[in-house]
Image 1 (cartoon, rainbow, N blue to C red):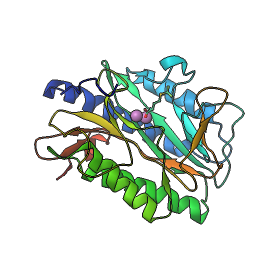
Image 2: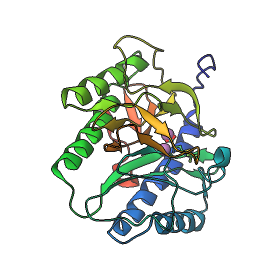
Image 3: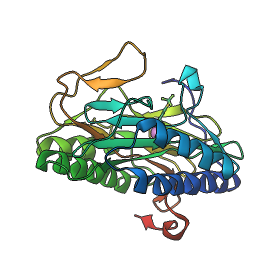
Image 4: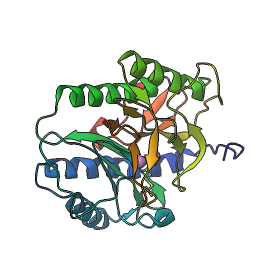
Length: 262
Ligand code: MF3
Ligand code: CO
Ligand code: CO
């Protein structure tokens, strides 16, 4: 993985990533109004699967290395890769990350957001807001000749200054017509370190930020990753492309794409 070469996508391929990314964004928007007390994570999954098929796409997570469902639903202390379940009913005050990855015309659009179920506690609200700001700051570092380490450095600096911690065990990743490829994009690290960014690189930034310890453990189902101290974890994810003059977020609604951060 570390020695795998980083592929530069052609403009034709980036257009396919844009279409897949827009669909991923629209899917999250479609699911958002369902996020209410009383809904099960399986109902979210099943609606996602139907909607994805109806839009001519397939669900990247389904059967990926044996993952059994179409989306990941990660509630409260679940860091990532939560498996939708009929018995898991959302309740007031929960936070839930929904991570979707439709495959459209062979290309993957990978994005996630953390939503509030009803009214959040003050700490949940702060954690979710800080995590979204971590993603924003990470994206703002992306431009040609910047380095992978710059992204993690700004995310770690901001998260820790706010009293939170950065998950180490899961990282952003190259994505194209392959779900997970080079480069790995840690959400911690050192400015000036790591590979140089080049136009045509496409990867995710997907910080998982914890209320307490950064340490995680994976449950017996081999997927569900939870915080070791069972405190809250939040995550936001976009798929981005390095452009000639900065960055393009590929997983935005159609009306919001083309915004360039220099
Ligand atoms: N979408 C997740 C990511 O951001 C990966 C989910 S893989 C699965 O990389 F198998 F858990 F679905
Ligand atoms: Co994802
Ligand atoms: Co991802």
